[in-house]
Length: 167
Image 1 (tube, rainbow, N blue to C red):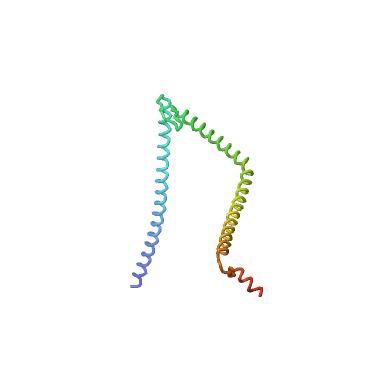
Image 2 (cartoon, rainbow, N blue to C red; image 1 turned 90 degrees about the vertical axis):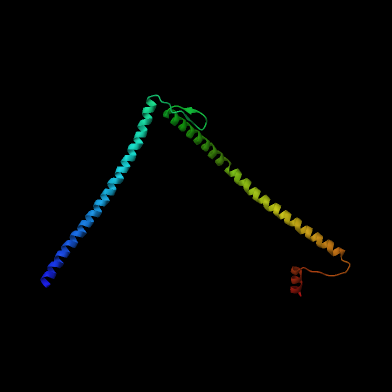
């Protein structure tokens, strides 16, 4: 029994190692297959892009017009005109941005000073409105005090606390 068991165990160990080896080879082969498929799809897409480029060149060479209307309303009839128009548009935008940047740099200091002055003006106006509200409140309290016929001394809470602390 032991001889047959050891023969079985040896055979099983050999087969298990072969199975593991074959599984690793299978995994490597699947990775290679995925890589090759990815490369195939990549080259097929490149082929499609190049075919479109070739079709454009042949169409332009044969005199077939493009007839594309640009945003500014001009009609271009070839890719050369199309790309020339796009380049001119980009150059115009670049000039506008540079001019705008120059204006911002020139006006930054004065604009910053003006913002500071405006902040100070806001503070002054807020202070003025608070002072006017206090003056109105004081005038109202004085008018109420003058209207009273009895001679009663009234103190607000802050003045009362000062009076008691002085005693």
